[in-house]
Length: 275
Image 1 (cartoon, one colour):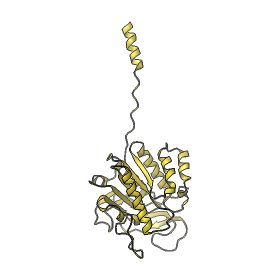
Image 2 (spheres, one colour):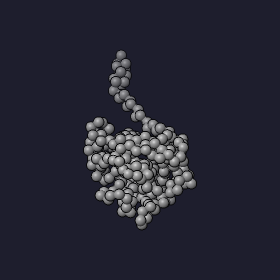
Image 3 (cartoon, one colour):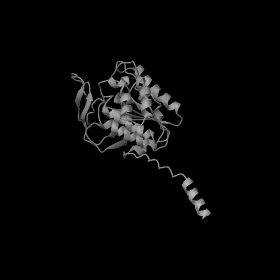
Image 4 (cartoon, rainbow, N blue to C red):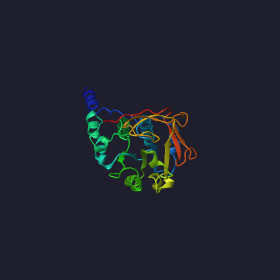
């Protein structure tokens, strides 16, 4: 009987196995494998048109798939350093309603244009969830107080991405930014022309992608192709090509200034401001 009692005591003293941690699960994104598999790749830029639901959602899927490489990730978002501390706190949180409210209290979210939409808030939440499984750092890499577009702003954006890459050995930087900042031909329409942020990154270690142009809608403060601004609202995007299948095409011949194009697989939908 004593040996039965001893066995029972040992059984009760063994701790129950810890519940298995849920593995990171990513939505498929055709073409991303050929991008993240490229050797000596340190920077990936996704040029966007601010104010859509669909471009940030696809970028979030790209970040998730990039996490599968096991490289530490640095994710660049086109917010400003004044928002960085709030982003850091949110990334370390559980993503509760209170955590979102605290994030939205940062000064950058008061902007009425397309950089601070519900879709961008949802993107940060998806990155936060990826960060529960993988090493991810989010940086606000735009510049204050520089208004508009300038050589100084482009240099500051590139410097922020390079510094973040250097701060984390072996990391992959993947950034979501306005299409002009990602264009490797630079700001040729400016007088005088100047280099874009993409041009100021190491050319042999950088890939940049443009968005497909099937039309749709976006939230912004001015029309897509000039015209008279009518305040911050939903605007139409011009149709320049048919809807193409969702995914990424790595082909520098598709769009001048870019290494390829990404498609969300539908026309774009506008995303309203988060506030």
